[in-house]
Length: 193
Length: 299
Image 1: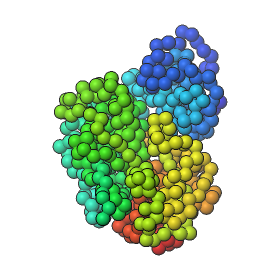
Image 2: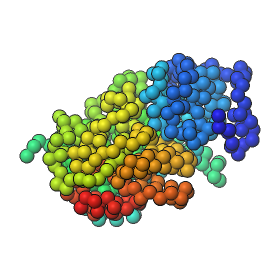
Image 3: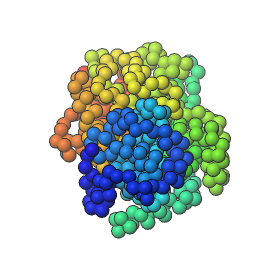
Image 4: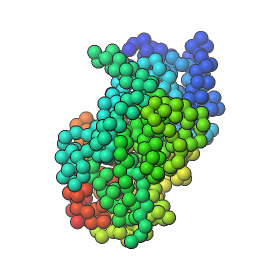
């Protein structure tokens, strides 16, 4: 097992602890994960096929099998505070290969959703939200690209929200319904000042 | 003149805003094959399944549903050219069609913007339409070729969300598919097999933004495996993978000191080349990695 080495020494210590402490287990966590992910995580028999085919495993301490175990044991804090949670590229190789027909990728997505509710979410994810809120695009158009499009005989802006900004209001209403932009702004400000 | 099939063309972000040649090539090459890609006015980001899905799946559903409703209003199926968009648009469409509770929840939100998801259209990746012999098919593609890419070796990168997870798709096994290779061979090129072909490019799930060196290390492994079998170029059907392989090579050189100069093409750019479009019409000069060495072999 690769050693965890993160800047926060308390977190490091906690993540290095290989023992199961019953008082850290929340059975509701397992249920919640299963509900969001739509997969029966408790059926996992820890074969490790998921980790074996994971592109992130060979280059980090991220182990999808370990997260599956945390899901089953209800180790909520351990799962949601581990920075490795964000190393899943969502390639779904583990899901396609799982001999129990589970979806470990969706377990990760469920954990990320639950982490985000506690404001544990990397800044780059939130910046995508900001970009979409203001332009409709996660990767917006720019002047270099506008010139390139023109050269290709295309419209300077694609017929998306770029050309029809009047549609952005609808997007903002959806995001505001969930208060997501406000949350993104607040968390980014807390982290980056 | 054969009858044209019309689709609402969902662009996403990276093709129109970073690789416009891929967008343009898709429209022009498809038209020659009986597919008319109509603009889907007011569409937005799909939204990015990694970033959005990770934060809150419900918001991801609602945002993707807005794009779907725009196509429903046009009464056209959606065609798109990006695997990330495919995950959002195809999968959310499928989920909302088959899960009443989910659909009701999404429609509750869409009501605020006078929209309703009805589930009246289907979503397709352009690559699957090209391969489907009832729509286009390999033979018709072969017949459309004017400049065969003979003598070139091309490594196919499938990407992840086109075929995986397989039980939420309809394209069979994801271990060793060969249908995109058939599309490549129809252009006269040789499609080469390489180690761990189905591995991710490394960009997805928000990892490119979260930890760039980690993400590039995955890309680097794929590039090594492609070089190992003598590939002259890599082709993909996802502009995000395209960005990761193309601009990623510049970043790999900066961070790891390894230089590949491996040209990267969206399949529709290759198709455009083979149909006789010029490199400038395809905007190949916008690629970070020069396509010249490949072009010299075929033009």
